[in-house]
Length: 106
Image (cartoon, rainbow, N blue to C red):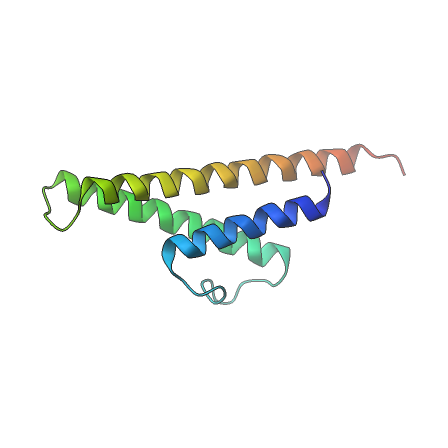
């Protein structure tokens, strides 16, 4: 797996999370490191926010709130699920890349 494919996957994850939240592209996590580590941290933060939103929507619907519809709950749940699965895939590919680099002979 090359680094451009990982960067593309991370960019797609970032864009999907931003579209789901309606947030600005930068500035979600203040004081974070720049570069890959900062982007990874911001992506994890966005995944967490999506999961918290889905949980709060689900709890409100279960409590009988009229402001929350079942379709909103299901859409938020699916957004959080897709974002989490993408995060897991990025982690798996990063781990595989790390193992490949560590197995290289110098």
